[in-house]
Length: 285
Ligand code: C2E
Ligand code: MG
Ligand code: MG
Ligand code: MG
Image (cartoon, rainbow, N blue to C red; front, top):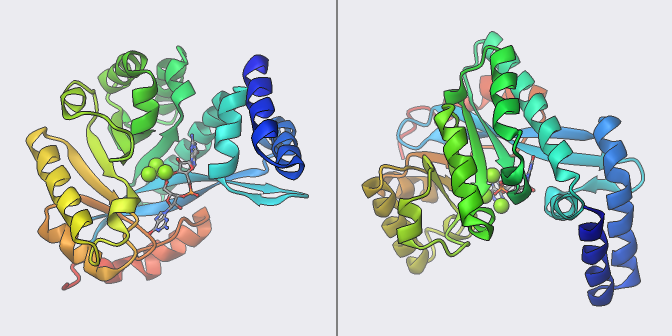
């Protein structure tokens, strides 16, 4: 682990400025304490059924409020936590917090599918499957209501390891989504043998869907491929209503994006569920 940290930092040092190097060092040093001091939080972004506009679940997205550095985005600290190995503890915390939240919402009458993001290193964790099944069992949560999102590139980084771990997770009933699909060079042949339930089209294809003919072609063909492989489909990055309409015509299953809702803290999300979500249900496009 340490060797990984140093190697990453030395490379950063050679490539970046002193300032960037120092910030990364600060982040790396602060992370273990942030985990124990509860400076980490989860925000939740809803996922809606594309046909009916009904909310079907949420994705947990991590946030870090550092007392001095301010808000540190996951795109910045998750890669560093992967280098240092701290990601394993981050994931453990995320899973517990997200499942607690899911259980609470279930008790409040909100039956929501929970999606959690994993890193490549998590797939090497021998204990992942038993930890998760234990945590689900303790809270009497169904594994079918949990989706683990793994990026296409994390899977391709070590295909054999990923296949093994994802198959184990799936055997326990947990759903697997291939995140950021279309950016990681998985071939169609490889896709066929991957134990996944869901393809999550990368937002780079979705955000400008109504303006870009080429994006529409890519999305349309990916959706029909997914259908033939019996995979569910999610589009992330829906920012405008016309994209919803197009995705509905193309037969996408589930949608997520700023047009519906940004990732929100739990109390705010509850408010959104009460006040805003009903307007999307059965909406005429
Ligand atoms: P992701 O899993 O692909 O999550 C989607 C990202 O797109 C989120 O950014 C979300 O806020 C953003 N997003 C959603 N809808 C829209 C939209 O309509 N327009 C635009 N422009 N963006 C949208 P966020 O929260 O900053 O997370 C970035 C990435 O960090 C995630 O990408 C994921 O790879 C990683 N990440 C976040 N939380 C966790 C975590 O708990 N564990 C791990 N391992 N990775 C995480
Ligand atoms: Mg994700
Ligand atoms: Mg994604
Ligand atoms: Mg992403």
